[in-house]
Length: 156
Image 1: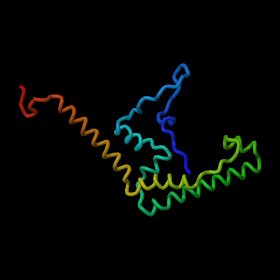
Image 2: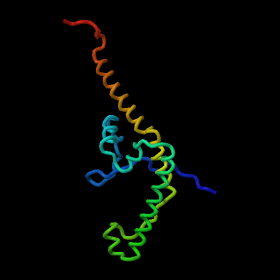
Image 3: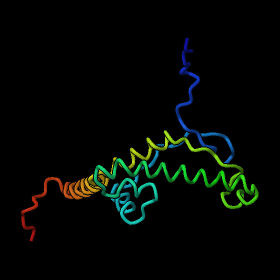
Image 4: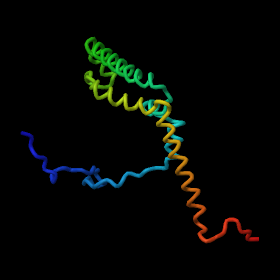
C-alpha cells in the first residue's frame, strides 16, 4: 500500500545560498520582454531552440525526433568504443569518467515535443504574436498617459 506524502515536509520553493552561505528563498523569476525573447530566438537561437522555431511540415515533425534518437544512440556507441579502447583518451575527449547511458524514452518524448512546436511554424508564430501584442500594449499605455486630452484637438 502506498505511503501518504507528508506535505509539510515538502520543500516547494527553491533556495539559493546568499553571500554568507545561508539559504534564502529565490525571488520571483524576472520575465524579460517578449520582444527581446523573439529577437533573441530569431538572431541567436541555441541548438535546442532551433528545433522549436524551425518551420517544418508534419512528416518532418514525426521523423526528426527519430533522427535525434539515432544520433544520440550512435554517439553513445562511439563513447563506449572509445572507453573500451583507451580510458584515458576517453576522459580527455569526452571530459567525463565513463559513458553514461542516455534515457532514450525520456529524450524521445522531449524531442518530439520540441519538434511538434515547429510544425507549420506554430511556436515562432505565437512568439511573434506575443511580441506584437506587447508592442501594441506599450503604445496603448503611452497614448493613455494623456487621459482627458483630445487627440484630434489642435493645441496651437
